[in-house]
Amino acid sequence: MADPPSGDKPQYKVYKAGSDAPPRETAPPPGAAPPQQPAPGQQPPPGQGPQQPGRQPQGPPPQYRTYRSRKRLRDRILPDTGLPGRRREKEPKGPKPIGPPRSRAKTIKRVVLGLIALTAAWILLSVVLFFISAGTQDGVGQDTERALSNRGSILTGSTILVLGSDARPKGSKEPGAGGPSRSDSILLLHVGAGSVRRLSIPRDAQAEIPGHGVGKINSAYALGGAPLAIKTIEGYLGNDLKINHIIEVNFENFPDFIDSLGGIDVKLKKCVRSAPFGEFGTKGGRKKLSFKRGENHLTGSEALGFSRIRKNECDPNEDDRDRAARQQLVLSGIRGKATSPRTFFHLPWVAWDAPRTMRSDMQGFGMSALFFDLATGGSGKTNVLRPDTLDPFVVSESERRIQVRRLLGKD
Image 1 (cartoon, helix red, strand yellow):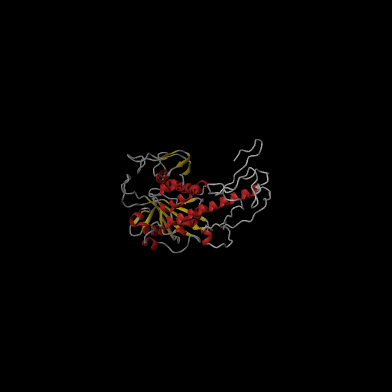
Image 2: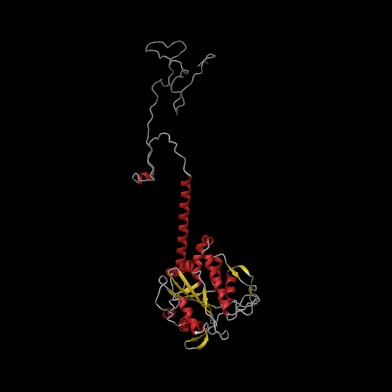
């Protein structure tokens, strides 16, 4: 084929897909009339030879088949019910109208609702962990349960005996490790309807121990365990006082609970410096305990040692009442830290460790009600029995009667 003259538009050849030879003659340049085919019996125009064999004559464009794609597996299995979340063929939409911008109040509302949902989930997780931890703890023995009175409840009002024993784990450096333990602290709580009243009994108070004569009241726990301690305390205080529940504090796990709170803060009116005792200040043990006047931050082990100091080198004239007062400072520090907003961020750890510091006849519901009452109404003053004489530590019957009436809310 001859090249087009200079200045003319180029010609194009059209091929059918998949063929080696052009399917039809050269297409005319854009805008030009298609070449005329000679009629039968006529000669082709000059410059146009006869049709070559093997070439397809020009004709209508090839026909193509149209196939519909198969449905997705999900659409073949699930019928189109029109429910939200199913993909449906969308009708063509016009241009989306431009509405007013999202208000700032709606954004803040969504953020607040999200925070409330996260807070509720965090609290629910803590409650679940608390009940699981309380349910997996060992309870008290059957002899102890039989010694308790069935009157009263946590909601309507009941008296709870809290005993902190001075048991030393086997293998520890403390004297008397592995032997019988005495009640290192004795505290009575009267709890009910969001109110908590407390009475502390000095451990050296002289009392009648059933079957063993007169002795220090804390020795009843070593002689007969919790059942004998319950009978001794009820007989010592008298005035129709009945103990409904008991909590035995495990000092071995107590430091872990304090540490899960991030430690506690106590404010002292004077310095406290202990003589070496137990594992504190002794060879191979912890350092000697010393606390300054004013604010002090205590770790778990320091809080345990602080509540057990009996001899204060800063004030040699202290007696067991000062020791009981330090124990109340620790309890107040625990309550203050447990209700602090900062504790919320590690609340599940606190909820798990709290039941593991004690052994009680109360199950998860009773323990949760007790902790709620302590958190909402446990900031009151702790009363302590006042002795007539310090050596021996003797408390008059009238003093005991007055303190029991205050404990039960009758005065």
